[in-house]
Length: 246
Image (spheres, rainbow, N blue to C red):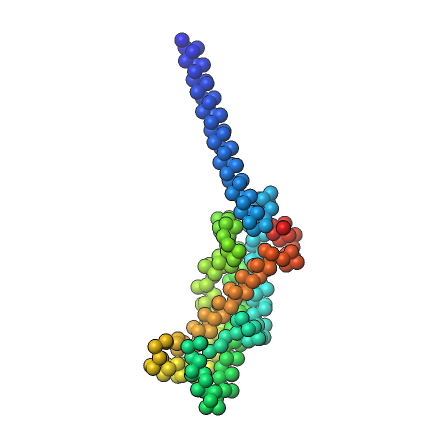
């Protein structure tokens, strides 16, 4: 009787162990399937390890942010870029038109140029903030980027650096604008304008330019991210070639 019970117990344990093994294999197959699907969607070879993928993502972000800061921090980086040029707010079109009709077009042009120069000054000074955010990227952050859309890396940077970028860029922009008294003229004009307009304009010129500069910076970083994802010529290192291989 004891032998029978022992045999039954062995069979039950063996069956349970076999079932657990099958369950573990099933989970592994599902995990591998998910990884393969994500990798295929992003043109990333599924054979790469998590460490290689994270290394590739960090290098892509470092390259993208460095290129963006250099591009926008150069003279005319904003001013001669039709997509990013900082102009008077659309709501202020009537104010701008009136000033030009009064022979003050040169003043308006100077104000617009000064806003763009301020954004360019600030954009060239933010690489260290991006580097810190990239250095702090975890495996979880990397996996979330992999599962995200084609600008997921840029979105990660936006969520993790906007506060620090604003703090760093604002005083640089403020100093740049102060050189031509742009802040004073802006505040005088638009504080009065807001008294009679339904659509209010932020009388804080520094805040307005800082917001526009940040927006332009992240647009450019997103474009750099797309290049690396889609253009083999943009993958300038071995790890980038491996991680983003077609």
